[in-house]
Image (cartoon, rainbow, N blue to C red; front, side, top):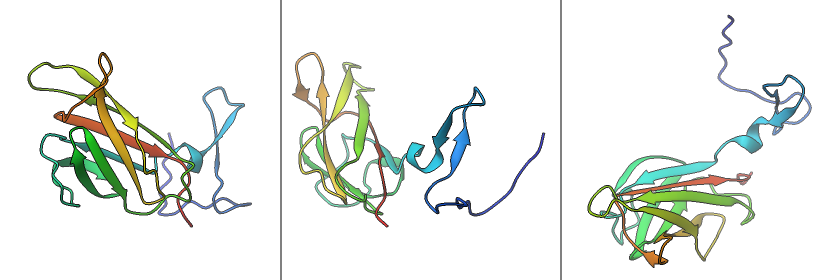
Length: 143
């Protein structure tokens, strides 16, 4: 087994393009395109109307979360996305009370520096503040 230790990886033909060979040894994937550019794990029951990190358990490239209304949160991205052509996915779970699973929907006001998400119960589309909300953002960061 070998270990390579480096602080910076840069593609030889393009700064933003490093290809990694997949498990089968033939197909490749672009390293930068496959990485999550931002993610957050937070407690939606304690997030408030202030743009800060209240309720955030852990995150990457997130500067603040704001509770707009029940189950509706604005997530501020620290280093902006290149455009609004990115993907948001997530899930929610109520660890107290009903122990229901929830779906995090990308909502409106998608911007390079923030996204609004709505945490809803799939059975009736009711919005809810739950004790766990996780959201991941994939796409290109602004240069």
